[in-house]
Length: 205
Image (tube, rainbow, N blue to C red):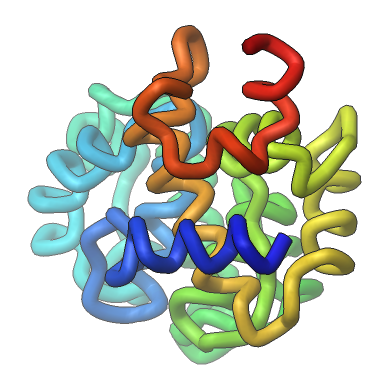
């Protein structure tokens, strides 16, 4: 575990979220949009969405068509448009337009599940969490950092195995590694420095 984490840190020394944002509200919106959508696509969408609705107060007053027309290139855009407006309304009505910093309050927002809440807690408030997306789930279980059949089980196992002060960084390392080398269909094991420590590689070499 220590060797794998050390290698990942060396490979991805400046690991941060790829979602463009300037504040917690923008991060929340971008993360809601990122479900079944690439970060690159989200950044294209938010380049127009954020100037149009820069705060929760602005978005709370938006019509469905106004939001939908700006996010139509995202997956599940119809549901996301409704969720974004309702989330903004709740932020205004219950939180003074600010994004809350507890898991319970975040998960009470439409379109916000555990993964999205973890992303916001970690990146907006620096609260240690490990958000398990498809990359983290795949890479962690391939390498052997976890042996789980669900994202929640993977999260719990990673939290137990990884020192808490590395949770946020490790989340980003695993995402970047999944994008760069440990790809879903054809992992580039011959190029991967983690191969000597990887369960998947050992079982398939």
